[in-house]
Amino acid sequence: MRGEILGVERRRFRRDEDKLEIVMSVGIDRATVTQVAQRHEVTRQQIYAWRHDLKKKGLWTPNAGALFYPLDMPVMAEVPAAQSAAADTSPPIAVELRLRCGHRLHFDSTIDPAAPTSLIRAVDGA
Image (cartoon, rainbow, N blue to C red; front, side, top):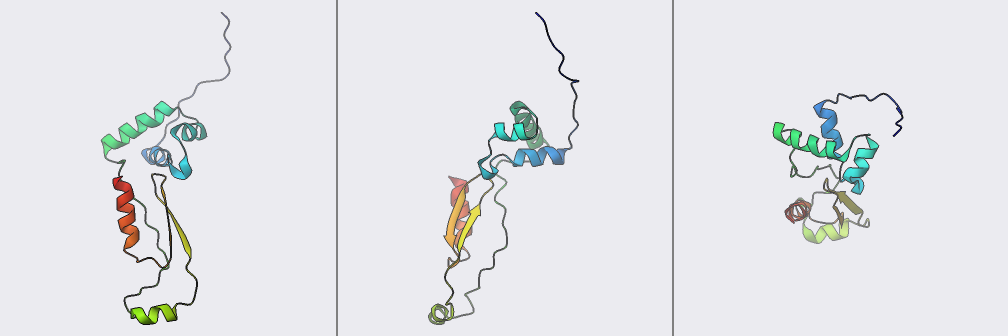
C-alpha cells in the first residue's frame, strides 16, 4: 500500500471566545453543525467536544435565551386609544425577529410591545 503525505499536520490553538463564537454560529441562518465545521476547517466532533467543554466551564448554555435588539416602536401608553388610530397614518412595518435557535417570528409594528416577549418565550418553550 502506497501512501502520500499531502501536507504538514498542524494543531491550532483556539481561545474559548473563538470556540464559543463558532459553537454559537450553529443554527444562525439555518447553518448546520457540518456547515459550520467546514467553514472553520474543523470536524463536527470537534464542535460537539467544544460544546461539552464550554458547557462544563459555564461559558455556554443551550437555552441561553434570545438576543434582543432595540426596535423603534412608538409607546402607545401616553396616547389614548381613540386618538392613536387617527394620529398614526403611516402603514404598519413588517418586522422579522430571528432567534438564535434558527426560528423566525414575523409580526407588524402595530403589535403590543409586550407581545414579542411572550412569543419568544412560547417558541423557546416548544
